[in-house]
Amino acid sequence: QVQLVESGGGLVQAGGSLRLSCAASGRTFSMYVAGWFRQAPGKEREHVAAISRAGGITFYGDSAKGRFTISRDNAKNTVYLQMNSLKPEDTAVYYCAATPRASVTTELKEYTYWGQGTQVTVSS
Image (cartoon, rainbow, N blue to C red; front, top):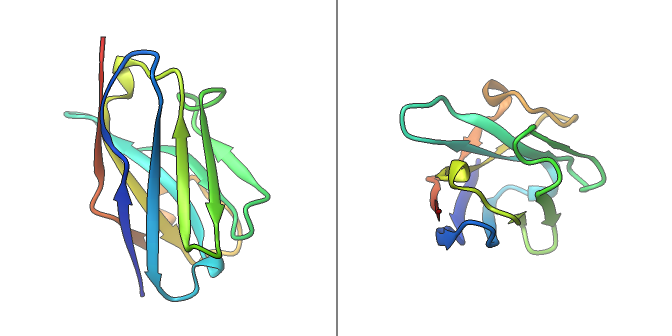
C-alpha cells in the first residue's frame, strides 16, 4: 500500500507558476512509477506527466509539454510538478498517482494508488 498526499495547489494569475508536491508513505516509493493527472469540471481525467522509478524517464501530455516539469526525490518520497506559464485552461483538480509497473505509463487505468487531489485555479 502507498498513501499519496498532494499539496501546493492554489489560485494564480495566468502566466504564473505553481509547484505541486506529492508526498508518499507506506511502501518504498522508489519502486513505483509516478504520475500526475488532472480533471476539470465536466471533463474526463487526463494525463499530465509521468516519471520512471529512478526519475530518468519522463512523459508529458500535450498540454504540459514545454511548460510543466515532473521530477522526484526518492530520498524524500516525493514527486513534484513544476508548472510554468499557466493558462486558465489549466484550471483543474490535480491528482498524484503511483503504480508498481516496471515501465512508465500514461494510462490512467494502470495506476493503482491515488491522492485526494489539489485544486489549481488560474485566473485570466
